Image 1 (tube, rainbow, N blue to C red):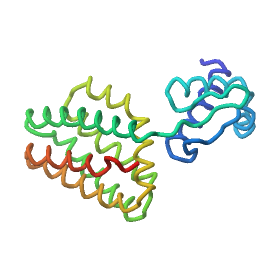
Image 2 (cartoon, rainbow, N blue to C red; image 1 turned 90 degrees about the vertical axis):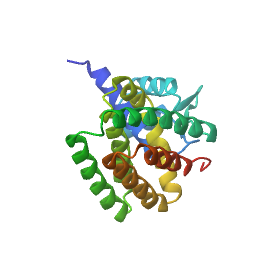
Image 3 (tube, one colour; image 1 turned 90 degrees about the horizontal axis):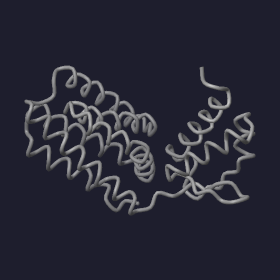
Image 4 (cartoon, rainbow, N blue to C red; image 1 turned 180 degrees about the horizontal axis):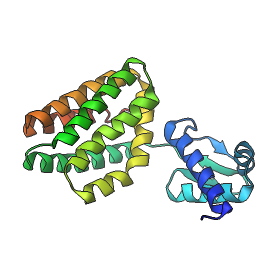
Length: 212
């Protein structure tokens, strides 16, 4: 059973990270260990440990005697995230098409996912849409059966989710355009149209290039 201090540090870490990823704590926000520990009802030690961990993930910049500052996502970082996502997803999709397309289980999950996206887009529920958006792309990677691709996709997840939140909140119209892109990608997967999928995937990522 984990020690109480470990549980407290994990709670401080997860809570603070979630707030950064969601945009609740924008880039440039100054955080103090005292304030965060007070909000969470914890001592400063687990919060300090959480801040250290988040700094190694490049989400916080530690400030001696001041606390920490939420590191903004720069345009170059956003470009790099999009580039790596495209590389992983394009390679995974190529394997899916080479294998004859997604299996019946993945097809059903994609259909269910798109139904959720439609509901979230209609309600302008950014949080819900971001989660469904992430799962849609994960399903494509997972359909490839390539565990290495899924591992690297997961390594990018925090940055991907942060970027999604930023882009979709900058312009809520992006909810609808992203949904249309996803529906087109799913249709290509179902129809076995690898060339059209490749063009659509590139267009999907190009939509957000330079948006920050």
